Length: 145
Image 1 (cartoon, rainbow, N blue to C red):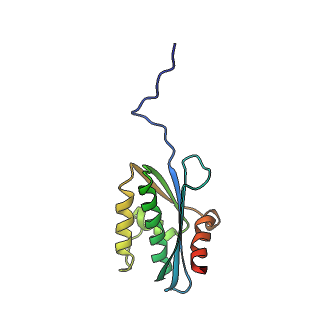
Image 2 (image 1 turned 45 degrees about the vertical axis):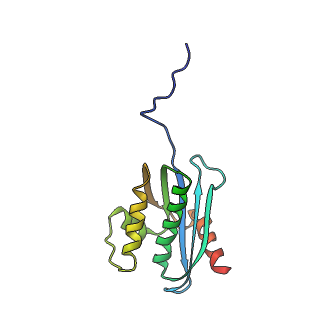
Image 3 (image 1 turned 120 degrees about the vertical axis):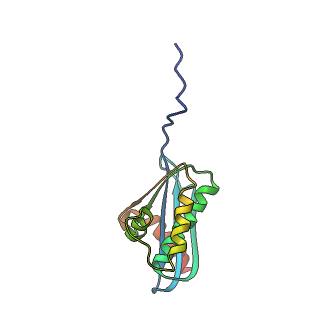
């Protein structure tokens, strides 16, 4: 008897994984962003972002890194995404645990929430800084250029 095809109503899909980080030397000061997008089951990155963004606060850089990473994922057609960040503030604001009070962060927060809504499934979680070294290195490399 031949094997049955998988049921399309219950796909077993692992998400792509996005790590993002912002860096600012001074607060505000010269700032940069880094983001790394990995395929669902690991392996080499499918996209990287490393860009100086001018003067910004650390939190603005963190948000802009997430925006750049989410936009890269959408351009590649990613549908399921897990976002991992070492900024507990940003994660809690996006999850709705904390209010966004800083006027400079409000439009960035709205943009992140809007971009996340474009994925079929998306989750965001906090990770320790030592688990976000690739995105951190990309942000710092952009600052050093």
